[in-house]
Image (cartoon, rainbow, N blue to C red; front, top):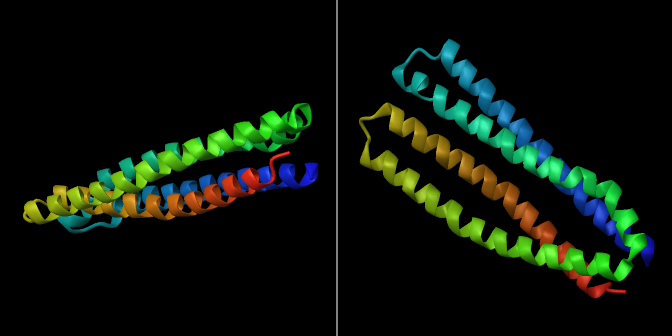
Amino acid sequence: MDTDIVKLSTDWAKAEVFSGKIVWLFSLIYIVTAIGFLYLGKTAMAKAFVWPFLAAGIFLITVGAGLFFANKPRIAQFEKEYHQNPEAFVQQEIQRTAESQKQLTLVFRILPVIIIIAAILILGLPESQNWRAIGITIIATAAFLMIVDSNTDSRNTIYHSQLSVSQP
């Protein structure tokens, strides 16, 4: 049972670290795209995407860093913490995953609202290429974060239920 819970926990943390790396990959794609628009973009619309994509890329770097640096140390800590006090470890993880579920519910309410506001921005200011580029970038970034967070939510729900069943 010990190794099952530790393996379950470390596998969850490794998957979260991988998500952080995927977010970093997308941040690089955003930044390279911004640079491409800067140097290769010939139209005003292409030039309008430079700053929004650069800002979104930097934002995604911080999101990826949060995922990576919050979970990378947990991989090594889980086994040590579990062996010190198995009941406390499982209880702490159950509480943490329950809190994460609440936060993810909030994220899935906020991101669609952000997408709707960005779409209204695009429709409301159709003659402004800068605002259109900002709106499109926000929609793309929020949609990407919903994809990542839907995987995080699914993984968190499974992890939480497995921990609840395996309480020592």
